[in-house]
Image 1 (cartoon, rainbow over the protein chains, first blue to last red):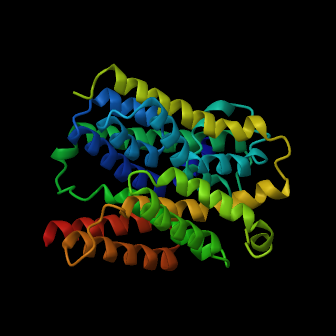
Image 2: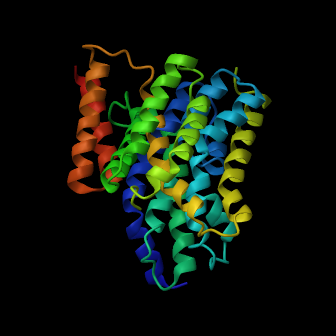
Length: 228
Length: 106
């Protein structure tokens, strides 16, 4: 492995380092404040490694949710990963070394760093290092939150908002990078209607299914208008 | 009280579902360049992000309180930062700090 590959990967992941340590700290601190152990924080960040599901997971743990509820919620919150995987299947076709680890660690942020075509010559090592570094930032942040969160020299009340900020910033990026906004508007309207019909504790799964149906029904109309 | 064995079962389930979701496209899809797959790949992220934003904001008590105002200002900051700098992580950090400052100062 070339030294320059490591420094290129490190440099590329600096924004994710900042974000993951803050978001991870928020997660670790929330877990701690809800009475969970450092071991559980570590297991979740190492082996789930999905920010949105981990935050939702705190609620699942608090209510000691049923097995079915946990599976369905995990699926609904993380179903978008199906589509990240879909679009990387081709790009990762020549990734052989550490392939399973690289697929497991394909988060929104890792995806955003690797989905543009311009990867270094030493591609396999680069993709692995970006994936590994991001994973380590996330684990480090969540352990920091769990161990010394309350000792940090500033008031961390409100850091849970970082989850909303993550989704909203991604949403704004989606809006900005596409000329057609029917998908975003569909997502908003269907979610609000689902809350009215199903209540705010149960709306996520019906909303997900309705979004999929609506966007499938209008496929022919939207396909030509929606740019990549 | 919630540190029992059942919590570890829930964590395992969340892990297994996430791993299955991440692996299934690589395992199942043979023709990754088909039109329908590209369509869903392009169209779904925006809709799902909108749904997740609604999910995060659903418990906000809308009104003239610091929480509502803090969230509103933070969302405006994120929008402006995203258009200005086009750096998601920077937008996230700016928005989060804005919200934290507002709810902690006022």
